Length: 501
Image (cartoon, rainbow, N blue to C red; front, top):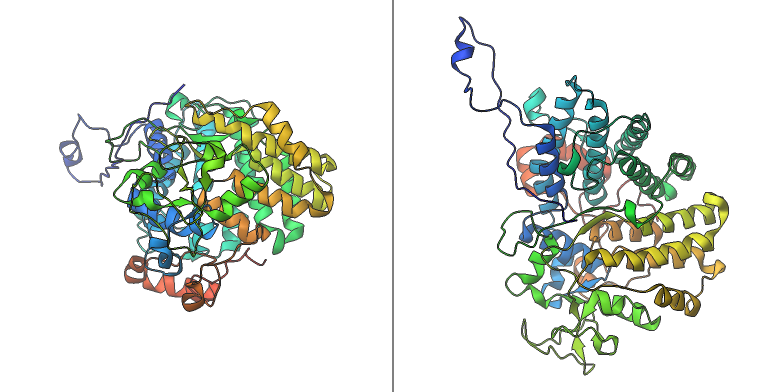
């Protein structure tokens, strides 16, 4: 059932102490001094996926989804290797989700409601989801002091080291999961856009997110990665597609806020339909007769016949005008566009069960964890990755027969375990550019080739991170300078703490 999305503006009013009883005269009795926690949670969750299409276009579609070769747009190819459009994620999230989730936590910490402890655990998991996305894009970021301008008067927060941020995020998830194991109820209900207040699903998500963060560390702290992976598995991770963490958007074509899928805005605004499916991505699927071709791709005329699908090469400038039908490329076919699934009410997936199964497969391969059966987890991941696409609705349905035929024709090869697992992770995270980008950096798979323009702009290399916004360098210069020094630079090729591959 579609979750109702309500665009809310969070305004927190503060009232200082006054003398001679004048404080009573300064309070408007018709307006609350604090909003209900459920209202704040809805707002935060709505903005976690992104809202402004220009912001989402530049940091996710043009930068990350092209860096990992899910999409290509040669009209904007130089943007991949320029630092001027990488600020959007940072600026949007800190002014919307960060300050409001921090305020929500403070409100719940002070609450004496019977559901406060459980609600607080859920809020903390949401906070870790938010911060994990920001730090995985930029590295060292404001964390321990972030969002406390109203609460504690910290206007210029320090930048914490990513290693310290990860340590705290993991500990927070462990604590939150333990709280959710106590059997307490949540008051959020339908205001919770991810799980409708389902405490068990939130617990699984906490452990699954813990698993993701643990695997990020595998190249810089393998012992720590193994220890936290073990905790996550023992705590209980996602076990089916019913556990997926996602936001279901509304079919609101004229909505200017965060009520519709952010990818939709990028592909229905101005000439951005020029962004096409990458040839690298398309060829990978077509070479394996992957049934997802007909789900994820269509011609510009809307035909999903896999025989008609052709991807856009990152260095091929041949293209007809935007929105032309058909859009013929040099292969004699039509350049493939996003198909019928990326529409206004399309869900946005923060973490899927398929991703979890692929991480369990890797944990089994590396350390013998999760029962040690690498192939079983790999097959479960592929199955889940194809099956969960039905959540897009609109007739999308990859059958079990198609999935089994795919696994039979493309069997798991133990000698290529890490390669196959992470290549499938790459396909399974289509649409979530930040997660794809992060796992590609961590694992090294698939092997990707940079655009020719990289030879001029980035020494022939694919970027590794997003640089800090110019606004931060202007408004919080001392903290930013300290962060740049401790991180070792602020360029597209600067490697963050866990990026040691």
